[in-house]
Image 1 (tube, one colour):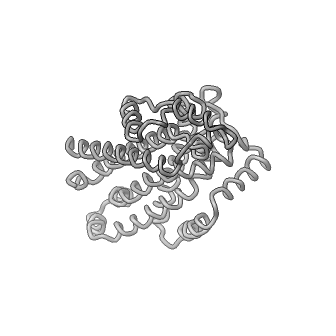
Image 2 (image 1 turned 45 degrees about the vertical axis):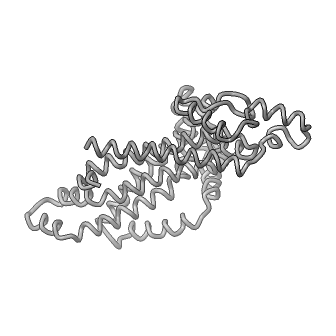
Length: 313
């Protein structure tokens, strides 16, 4: 088990280094000279030269990369080229907002998706099963921002159950925090619920038709115990989809944060990309990859516990 964990940690660290390195050099190629975006087109050549020297952009690219990655390894992501504030301070304010929405959406997808998947697996072809298939077609055909706008119109403007925009920190009010993240989380979770439900339902039916399940029934095991064995064998695929959904929801949070006016990493990514603030973009990339690595690591641990054969890979 220790070698299994060590391999997963090593692969996660390598992934972090490769992605951050690739993003750094691609950002320099794609953005080019950031001074027009930072100062505007009316800036003089002298002002641009002064800003390049101030932010260190006049140094060789490899020198800038080594300076960034050596500091990032200690948790220092540098200083924003726009605000000249530490990138870490901006991330500390923005990341909890996005994580609140994404984690809540993942929990909704896990709880509701698993419940729906089990119910559909126990009664294939039933009303709920047909409803799940219909929902999968409808939700994947509708744009995410349109679903968000519909939720705002119904539950925020018409019914006034939740706030339409804004974010309340849990330190200020726990109830206000839950209210502010509910609609964004539901908007993100709808598609994930359908995917998790379908994956678990299909896995449940596949396992339910295997010989060992028939043997368990022939030995007289109760329906509850048989269902538990079937669910344990069908869960790895659903867990994998759920982990991938978490990663996908991090990207989908950009649109949701714009619609609901949330001060998360989505809006920060958009604004930093427009002006070419590479230190902020690199900090966002590093934090996002860390979350992806952690989620995949936890997934591997859970899969290794559910299915010991996974540890041998």
